[in-house]
Amino acid sequence: MDFQFNTGNKVDGDARMDEHFETRFRERLERFEPRLSRIEVHVRDTDGTRRDGPDGIEAVIEARPYNGEPLTASDKAGTPEAAVNAALQKLVTRLDATFGKADRVRK
Image 1 (cartoon, rainbow, N blue to C red):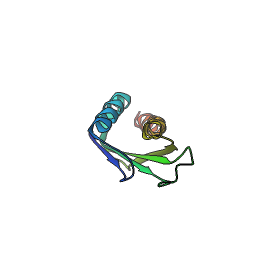
Image 2: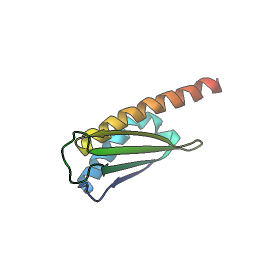
Image 3: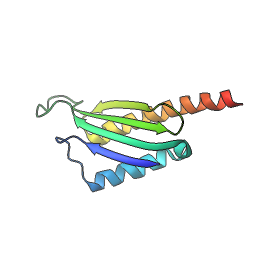
Image 4: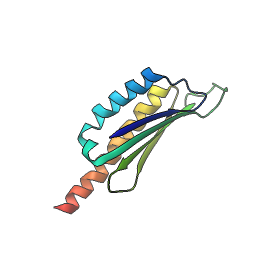
């Protein structure tokens, strides 16, 4: 499974952040790994320099199954870590539902 981490130009993303999230994703998605070709994470600042809201950072995660349509999940939070973690939880729920249904149909 390939992993790609992208940040907008207003979000500080460095190699440590990329490595941290890749490790976290590989741990959380381990059981789905044989079915996924790629994970892309996009983190961006949605309110620019106006820092008055708690939901100024958005994370969008796209999981690409080998034989299926891409699945996405997103969330907003005050920090990149919180936004990514919330979106990851949503993605795990979607993957459970999608692959669980596919497994039941195959039987």
